[in-house]
Length: 581
Image (cartoon, rainbow, N blue to C red; front, side, top):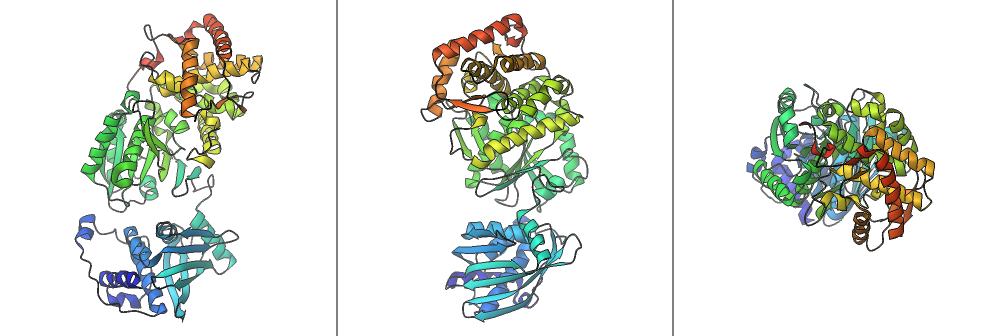
């Protein structure tokens, strides 16, 4: 048990041997943790083990938990008392939560010790059962004032340390409390996140919360569990220009020092150079590896690039994101893909989940109208292949929502919610994209080619919109979408001001794009198409004749409504109309 004893002695030196006599957890409302430089200078001394019996070992674990409650960074001292392959089981009902291996055990302990449902903890009745096990009572003072939650903690030891730790609720009210503490508020419940994803390691909570940066609002600070007095944020340069005073005033009002990394977030800045710049800035601000998650604030380009930099820095530092554009809210607020363009669209990247995403509509009033329209391309994607009611909402209200920038309108909130719901339902179960038949690939069969063609200078949502309408016409040609529904799609594009095409696109453009995307999809086209509005079918065949017939249908509509074909030489939404977030 040498590793266990070494960790025990280090803990004794840190806390003092007398502290082992009073096993009581500190409350979460205690003083702020020591500053990082003070921790860095603390010495570690390894002495001969003072405790060898199982009761003493469990007491040592309890004291390590006390230190971790006072300062979350100290949880590693508790984790070090476990065997490398140890298991932690928290039994709160029919389906216990299990963690295996030290890294997973750390996540489980953090979930328990820092549950906001607990105001304080205390131990009692610690006793060794035999030479390899010990148990005791762990009682939580409930934060809701409804008395105590009673838990039993049973530890089994091997010659390395704790081999198995089991936490069991002792009565029905305690089981209900423990389930909420471990599993958290269920998405959609009052006080909980609106949505949640889990990639096997990180449980991302997605919050729909307007006014995150209002003076005195501690929601972001509390949610990110910031205890060092500093917030490292990676901010879109345009957003910083508009909101620097707001962000600094908010930070001061909640006792935070803002350490900003200001980076460009335009469509053409999703580059390796921009990502390397952010890496250099992360080196400069040097966030604590676990206690200071970086918050990316900006549109999808910024959050993608910043997320990739966070995935690379120190082999991965925690991060969160707050999309400030409508497109970022409806498209980039669920997935865990981060990337930059290198040789091709998103040529270099990774899957790296943020711990939290904040959907805050407070940034929408300053959004350029072009960006609002662009986001509608992604909304149409979700509506056409997954949610017919979302299509109906855009038919009935879309024009008004665009005019209002999706601000101060309950229908706007519903459209954003339904769009995120669609993304969650379609990609949430497969965040790593192991399956290659994905409804949300709709709008992305041709758009990659259109976006990378420098003649067109399209925003992402504009390219997706053009892709969607062309694929809707192909679905019509192939018999998946009725003539009436195809006309509804075209009419809605006209109403919303979405592009059906851009000058320079030909049927050959789409033929080439279909060949290019087939390589990306492992040699099979797998193109999602609308199977009626709100339904999805897939095709592996997109013959040239079908593309030509679909392009002819689209061209006939454009001939009647020339404003649906954008021309950069004259005027285009793609050129933008004002500086905005």
